[in-house]
Length: 389
Image (cartoon, rainbow, N blue to C red; front, side, top):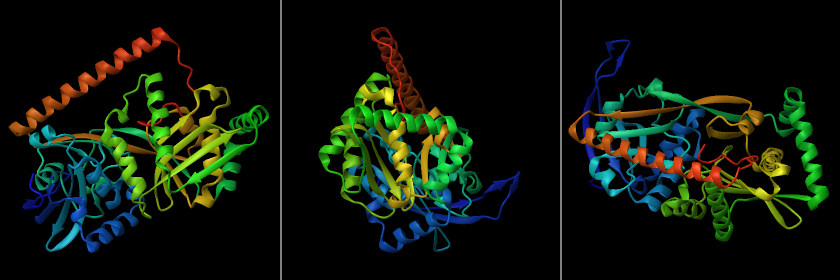
């Protein structure tokens, strides 16, 4: 793929079987780092006007971090009659994917939000592919509102959010009214942890020492092994992405670590990106030897208590329906999934290639799961099944 492409395409958006007036969309496909200050400012302005787009994974900062970590990251800058109408960040997983023009959301498995950053631009999936110069695009974590642009998902998965704009005290009052058993049980577990291990200590870090990042990743990989889940950190570039994000904090995308300790022992920790006042719940991990205390739940409890101090008004748990997400959520959302294709020969080859890769991954996970069940019975605790969600 050329470092910069300029593509013009007539766009006819069809709604309710009626053809809308034709517009001329133009796309500059560039590296994220090639965006100028004006383009980045416009990108952020578009995000600020749509709550669904206000996620760190949809920022120019995250796109630049992906470029540094994966190298094959691009942005299609969408123009209409000389005015920038939106941005579409995407990437190719490998050199083979790039040759086949088989693209994926920016960040791949590490991203919990995807879509076109635009407000009122109408664009069909085939047109988006042509403008981006790709034959096939596998999309997951498609955020709300993309259908209004013309980008409709094939199906969706449920996700949960926790609204904290009224402050943690108001949140816990509402939680007690809704589920007093959960509140009392959590408080009991806090007392039990302090009586057996010592006073609980919560800490939040904005600039994270690299050895702490490596420690969390190693614990997360052990968790993946225990639960027979795919190990996203088996790909070194995913580790590199976290390190790059930590080295380039910005208000729209900064990495934050939360840790819960007692008696010099780390009970649970979490690392995730924060977009202004929105925190994405990304990689939590806990000490399996302390699972009877529900350390993952205790950590999330402390993160919510600290939310006002941390400037957090919303926690997004990403897609996935698990018990602890439902317990702490105040609302839900849908994340779309779609396989968009131009239908040409290259797209057909790309889909076969992708289908084979998915099947091989599924077989590997199934084999590991059967082995784990024979070796031991895993007892799951709070936060065991977060990322990928």
